[in-house]
Image (cartoon, rainbow, N blue to C red):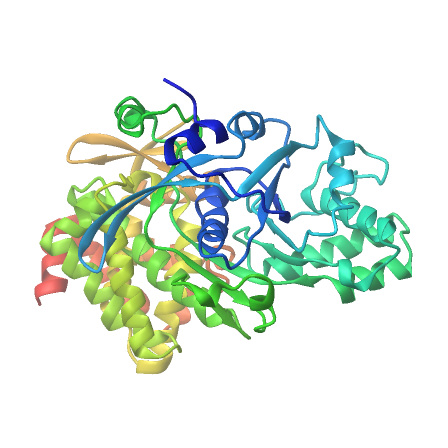
Length: 500
């Protein structure tokens, strides 16, 4: 069977693949960008709106660029899930990528790329740790280690090649999952400019002729479907080493004005791209509803006997628990229009029900203490502030966290707990694991003993950025739920909460 290449595709569809000019430099060839940004550009190309291609830069030594070039930049994208209550399963060949460059093997080719006058856009996804300053990076490194240093040398070569032409700057969209990613990237670039003494004219060009955007991206991209490939290859009729899979839902929030649409006409298609002058409400919506619902649910649901997010949605009790928490407690803490929040929440529940994704609760449970602080605790505090009372579901979820962290022994870097007599591993910062083990070692079965556990955990300002015992009524409510969980079981306690 033939491998997917341009020749293979043109033979199959009897149409020529368009030779559009390269307009986008993309740092990162991984699953997410190929299933998100490149897919959007492909959609715009198909509609004759963008007419440009992507050059993919592999920012680390090992990656997929060689495979991408063997396939002439082509790959198959399969988007699957539930949309408006209907199961969707779409397969398409993405043709928006021109080629890839491994800058570790072709550094000069990478720098030469900066001389291409057609380039207008830079996107990146180099993991959350990618946007970071490395004091050991030097101007003469080929290449330097950090992504910002690599990017700055690219910009410097462009500045030199076009003699500082103000029209040769970029629209820069980092997609790394850190807060205010565009601001952070620009800040680090300026650090390198100062360190390497690259001059005020270059600094001015970077600041005034390049536009750095804070972004929020949202789509689960599950990547290469190893277990399905034999069957998929037979169905596709060709060999593709780069098949990418993801969910149907997508969202790109960009903090910027409508000038972006002159370059990337997202608004001409049914793409869920939001331009806003303030990213914060959308970030809060995602973190509190999507991520918060995960963190609020997974530990209780796991103790109850569920193993995947899909099982949680399918179970009547856990489903009602999630809905009660999202619609009655989380949404009232947010400031976007209520209709928008409800629509987003319903899309989240559809995503949780996706039959094509096996999202395991134990995987999500990793580092639940810090996740709880950023994803659930802000909703608890905001609800108390606005309503004058403590929210029930989220307080129960706090108790479920403490019950989940009831481990009997430390093993390697985890704490071993038991669910219905079967071991499970609790993974978190080792100091947190030791704290919970010592607290539960002192548990004597009384309500007073539970209260001691809760108050001690609440007193750890390093965990919560405050002493939670100062939140009136919270410790008592959580202790009550926790005592019920350890004496009556998680199921009975959850039923009492949900059904009243």
